[in-house]
Image (cartoon, rainbow, N blue to C red):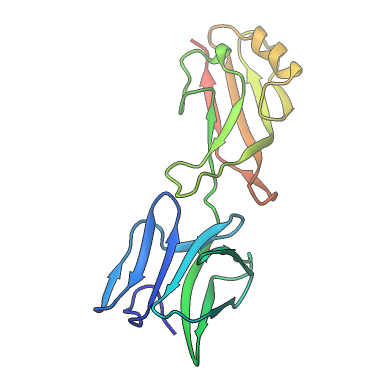
Length: 211
């Protein structure tokens, strides 16, 4: 069994790739890796398998599924209930195991408008975004809903509302129009949907005082 941090058999090259690519290769004992060291749940992980022989080879996975896309390219979808999977390559009478750790896509950060943190002109923003920074794959989350609270000038009492969708709904727009200098807006409990269709509750919050 081969793990990602040991030398591999001379006849195999296994690539796990996105915009960056890592390779495990020989003929001389060598390990060459780039940014990605894991398989992620909820997305299509692209894997390329090549062998040093001309004959046919068989590929299987211990958990989840692996789809042959042709010409040595595969899509791997690991399950959520495991921390690692083994890709088994059989060529002739020999079998080789390649073990990969499995991780979930990180939670996204909450961004209002085009600014991180405090937007300069809050009234010119149009909604909430959920963004995963510095992630290896081009995959993002969509905002399902969030709680928003207004207080201060323009409001006799704190006003709370659950906004459906990423953009300000009509109720939120009316409340924003009532805001004046010193009004405070607080956003939390942002519900987002990942590329796998699962909904996450993000506890990251956003506060802004109108100036």
